[in-house]
Length: 109
Image (tube, rainbow, N blue to C red; front, side, top):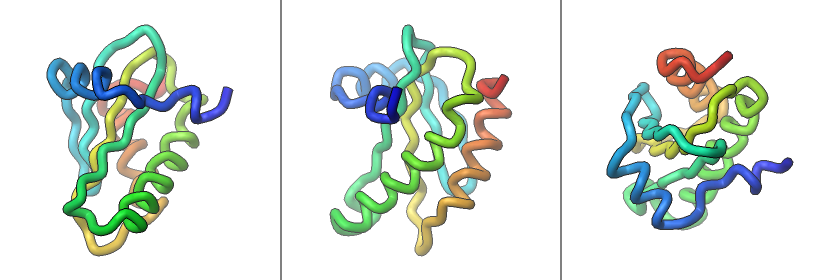
């Protein structure tokens, strides 16, 4: 399966996660998660981060970070990642913060 199969896309699903989900925080990210019947991830990047080119770059970096953890994630959850506004966004920072949050939440086997 590819990452596209694991994408959270529908507004209904995002609203469900935001309304009923629990939250974890790190220096560069907020994570909202909800137990579900499958593993899916969504990325919410607001216009406060900049123009469409910058927002899409942030989403690409977040997707790549999440993709690297997919084999380690045991349970089925809906995850929504919300980046915090910053001058610089890097793959290393997002990966480190995701690892920290996944461990804190007990998602990594």
